[in-house]
Amino acid sequence: MATSDWLYLAGDVDAIKDFVLETSSLPQIRGGSELLLDCEEEIKKLQKEYGYEVVYCGGGTFLLSVPADRADRIKEAIEALYRHKTLVATVTIVHEGQLPSADPGAGQEDLDGWAGRLLRATPLTGRGFAWRVARLQARLREAKDERRHVPFYQALPFGQRCTRCGKRMAAQERERLDERLCPVCYLRDDTGRSRSKTIHGLKVRGRFNQEFWEQHGQDITAEQPEDLDQLVEEAPRKYLAFLYADGNDIGRLLHGVEGQEHYKALSQALTEGTKAAVYRAIRAIREVCLPLPPRLRWWPFHILNVGGDDVMVLMQAGYAWEVAVRFLELFEEEVTRRAREALVREGRDWPGHWPQRIGASCAVVIADAKYPIRYMERLASDLLSKAKRLAKEKSTSAVTFLWLPTPVASEWAEPLLATFAYETAPEERAELLSRPYTLSQARQLQECVARIASWPRSLRHRWQEALRQGVFVSTALIAYDIGRQRGQRAEVIELLDRICADSGDGQQPLLPPVWRRLPPAAPGDKMVWKTALFDALQLAELQAMRPNWREEAAG
Image (cartoon, rainbow, N blue to C red; front, side):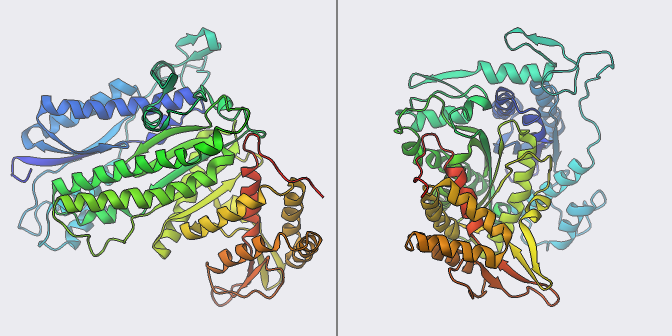
């Protein structure tokens, strides 16, 4: 709507991941996600009662076009909706106080920080839909920073604490599970367990999992796991992978939209394309999962959320890298195609400032199935920022990963990644990790990983230990092993060197080309030895954790 009687209203759920991932119980996680989806469905239904129009609603955020005289009522109704549906989740909502004025100073008296800077920096010409939304999002960001009040459940010192969250007082009992739960955890648990749908003869829970099963589950005989222990039950080692992906610079792409309908069409293309990419990526390795004898009892994937361009999936560790790479390939394909189709329908050309292919970044964290999911998510978020930096630098999709063989309680990836570097001389250092990788590099790396995963496990471990011992020690040992095998492994080493070479100039003074020597990045920095072999060995070790995986005999 473009009349003076209509305003834009934007909202964003506060600490959405803290609500969904407060515990590591799969029914609780699934239930938290379902409750938030219920709120979004209710927002879409309320538009008839309050007379507003939904521009976008998904992934915990929404943008509405509302009558100016009802903006405050709508804001209060949606805030009450989230409190009623979830008990503790809150939402920050802001709306335009007035439409953009021709007076440069108008409306600035109540703005500072991001919103004020945006208003002062933007020329009056071109203050259309995109500018109004950007200004509103800036206001929303400031409002979230100023939020002071959240729902609070008093926990008396003599009261028994909730079995799951350990924060609030227990109020109800789950006799079958011998659990005493607080009202919030009970609501999430009940929602996550009770909402099942029979699809192709199997009970499936979770809205995104149900969509996947309806589209691609005709041949699936494995049951959906009820908890994380069942999800990893058939893997030889009980490691869980948390995949977190997000579109690259999507906000900048949408900044140039020319109107509300244009925004709606592109948002829908983005949402549908992301879902299709996730579902097709999992389907792509279905042939790997199912035919292996004996057939799997438990389906090794669980889709937590697909909101806009934001994706979270839990799975057995053995499938994580292949799913991540395949997802990025399909994201570029699906989202770019759908965006082009949306533009064509509106008679528009592909914007000149857009990349030829819309990409995404992905981070995977692997840890023991008992490791808290909230820590996995925070590590994945930190890793994702590193992948996004590479994606922005190279104008492509990017992916990275972190494997925690032993549990470490940390929310930041950098201290953990730093343990994979060591000094080899006063002016030299060795870095065992070459991650993150561009999509092109990740494809090549996957080829190497598939071959290395079939090697004897003892050989993979020996090479990992050798790489930690030093550049020359590891090169000599690997050269000896390659010689014993009559050069059968040399091709993989050469391909890994080419992957490493794609990241920068560097030199290859040693044979076999296990390490690449990079010059100092800046005056005063040390020369760096870098290898992609360690990443490949770790990923191969993870891939070998697939049920019924076969390796070569040691010899």
